[in-house]
Figure 1 (cartoon, one colour):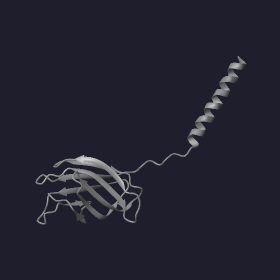
Figure 2 (cartoon, one colour):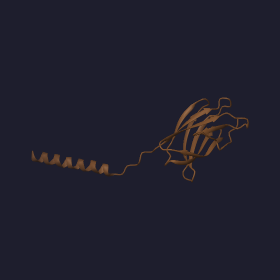
Figure 3 (cartoon, one colour):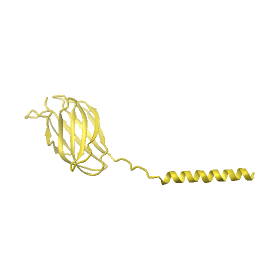
Figure 4 (cartoon, helix red, strand yellow):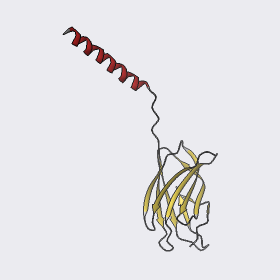
Length: 141
């Protein structure tokens, strides 16, 4: 009986030690996302939107999310930005054309709306991100 009690005590101590060690190991911080609601308003001259890139304005790693958003659709796209700040935001169409915003303030967690619209009088597509007009575009019908 003593042997059983000793074995149980040793097992209990070993389990307590293992659980304690597991809790002492550092854990990775949970990724925080900025959510973009992509609105494809290109019904008149249809464009399929397929890629979102976000780059810190001061330089750094470009973060990418590939997706499919057809004309007249809306799609939520998450990007795990490292911190709050100013970012260049670029959205691409399936034919490789793009629209971009040079400096958009993004929060964590946060959300922004990107709207891509059919061409205006200039013949180029236009849009907005977080309420800002696009800085540039090479999207044509």
